[in-house]
Length: 294
Image (tube, rainbow, N blue to C red; front, side, top):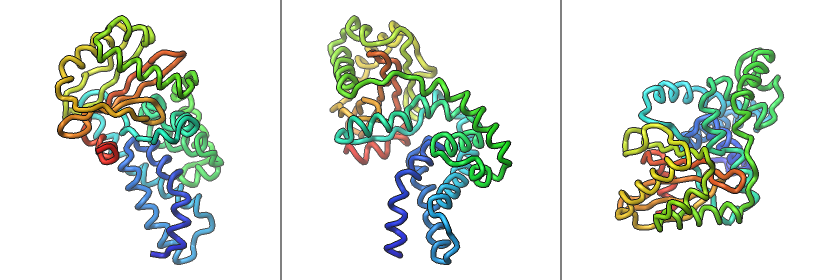
């Protein structure tokens, strides 16, 4: 392999993987798409046919993701239960600045909003609004007119607007809330737990039909409290350890049993309370986290 080409590519890989992840909602598939793009780019580079590495790779990654996304949408039509993106683990040492940026880029709320978009809407929005790609280049990437991609991005913007309306919580406060949350559950303290939750707190669990999970999202302080304490009493014996982690820039934790990572839970905080909990249980979405933690 050409070392100089590999080094040029590595400087671009992080932003490409993040773009692919936001397109697909699957980190492992995002890495595969970027690797496929690298192979195409390296061949074209060897032939001296590329003027702008970043633009070329961004275009190839987007088109590869669109192909995968269209297929994925068909699979998700028959997905069992709520769907959540594959969680991305970040290191505590990157906190707090990097986590704040990561939470804005790939928050669960944003990823769920993106999931409701048509593939071309998603691509147009992410290219223009997230990566600041001019509409002229977006039009070339998507093989549509500039007017068409402007409309696609505008429609997408309306859908995702509320996903970015959240209060900013300082890192230390977020960690304090996570620790208090875990302590309340561990001690079966329903009153303490309810004080940490917003009135309309949301709990979403993704088992993908492979492991038990809530069939529909659960909302409301009382209902979520009862659910959490019930789940704790039912599964506490199997949990061997709890790892405190940061998932998609949010404070969270991983429940680890004898067979590996059983559940990864991210806590979304708003105005000093927990507004949402995203519990990923689908084993296929926990492989990357398991490899990092075990």
